[in-house]
Length: 163
Ligand code: FES
Ligand code: FES
Image (cartoon, rainbow, N blue to C red; front, side, top):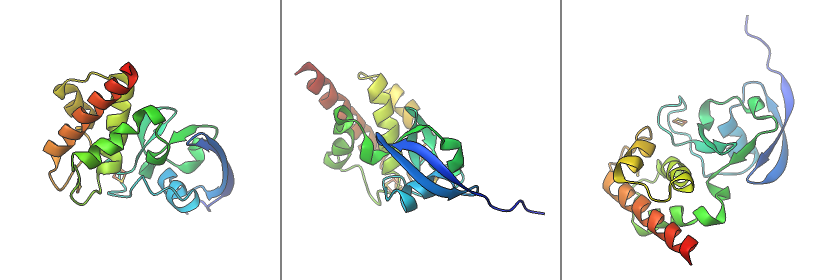
């Protein structure tokens, strides 16, 4: 027999702000972010932890929000595309400038993974970029433009920090 759903209060921080939601034990973090917090950066792709479209940071580490029970996020710090720190805003802008989207569905995950790489490694090699993004799927095949976007973002972030 299936366990009945329980509703509990989830208290966490999202993009630097304390938040509280009533969620069921079946709710995944992605659904709380999109449906309760109104944050549409993270996308639902496969829903199985395989494509990366739903990527967010949990306590600064990349995580696939489609398959994390929301109630496991008690007291955690969640960062979405909307809440990237100012020094990393160059990353989404570089994706726009490099025209790195066709359908755009993968971009949230690509940007969140690239931003995490550049946060920790402002001078990545192409091999570093490929490694950082290799588990994220782009069905449209915009990999060349995505590489250009990450190189461009890295250059702009270095210029910003040198200014
Ligand atoms: S939607 Fe989460 S990994 Fe595909
Ligand atoms: S641009 Fe369509 S999935 Fe990447």
